[in-house]
Image 1: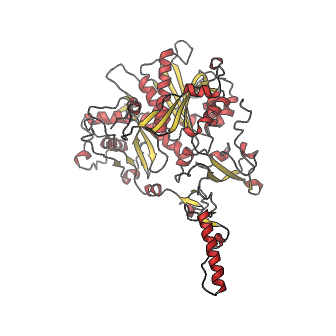
Image 2: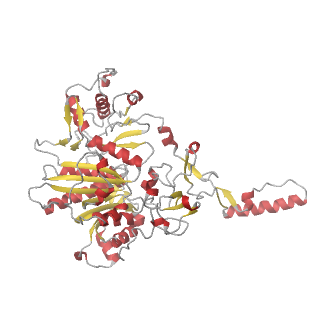
Image 3: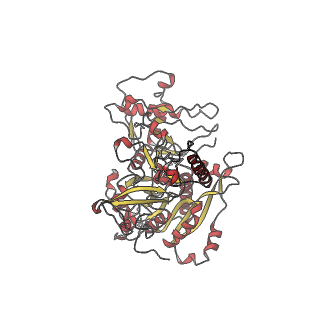
Length: 585
């Protein structure tokens, strides 16, 4: 079947229920519209609607409970005839109901207690990973790490290592921040047998300083600057949305497949002689930008000295995730001025000629589904050599319109896996529930009133909910958007829950995409597949018209197994980690 004119025809299920959060103002009205039922400030500990009772507080009695209730009723009738005391039967039992054991009859779950506790705790720079003897991170080095390494080699950053506090008021906030980073990183000879975990807590006094803090410093409660790949780090919140194996494998498959294809074809994305080729990369629903940053790290580390430049952008609707992602990028790619020198990042290579390619990596806030309609109005067509947006390093200089005006050589996505049903009301229509037509509109008066998960349990962390559950579209939306934004020879790499495998194939077909190959991922040997990574391209005549099941079977590779029977990493997964500069300990 061919795509219809309506971007997401399956979004509305009935007049009472919406399949996804509608596009438009309502999509950006909250990071997770409908997730919490809290209405007042004193209800901020109220989390999502209970997944067990769907917010009804009660459940039907089980068969055994019904039989027991019938016996109690008979006993009560007998006791009433003899004027004896009878057993009390509640009103809800009389209506064959029992209190929900999950929410204890409240209709909602509490916000994750670990998250609430973290809001009273200072930010942390986590300890550098333990690593085998003689193992060293490779690849692109962030500017802040460059500054730290040079300062350490000059013997300027070891005051606190010796147990003495540095109260020198002349030191800048960058001096203190580099010092904290140095403490967490330790020495290069601190290997697994010697290394102690030294996570550095950021003193609250630093937060109250009049000096401007580096954006990447975890200065807010509950924040952690964590290890990502190589020497790159990522800002995350405790007990909230954090990067996972899904992200790592997706980023590795996407970046390694792209680099391999580029090298084998000796391809160039620009045709103008004398100009640097521009590799354009788009990450849909980027979240905290874990996949965007891991794939970018791989591209910068692998395509050194290449006559090309990288232009990458992540699109994300959640405001908190956008803020964290931008601050992470400021650590990994933002210039650092320290001790009179400016550091811009580089490559950890024995070759003095190794130079990373120029890069421009941004985060744009928006609902990625809007790119479909925005791209259709773009007069530049599908050329990957469309003109750059206006110059300037501020993310605000990039808009959803400028993102949609380009075509991309690489697109990645890690869609949420689990279905959620939404109800909404229209404030200008007497608080009536939305109709099916309203679900596909961008009505500014529309409000999501509830989000009820239909598969598993809704996360009790607000930021984790849209990352795991289908708030703003599932795999079908990712395929449709990728198809609209890909360059003619572009590559789309996406992961999906293995239970949704059929949805991926159908979504790709409807979006005009052809699946090149599928890499299933198994958590432990002997168990079923957890998820799979799919590599797609735009359909062409050469893809033919084989039978659906026959095509599926021929393109599914042997699974990547994460852990063996002994619980340790398998050689296949160690290869992934090793290529992403993550030590295998």
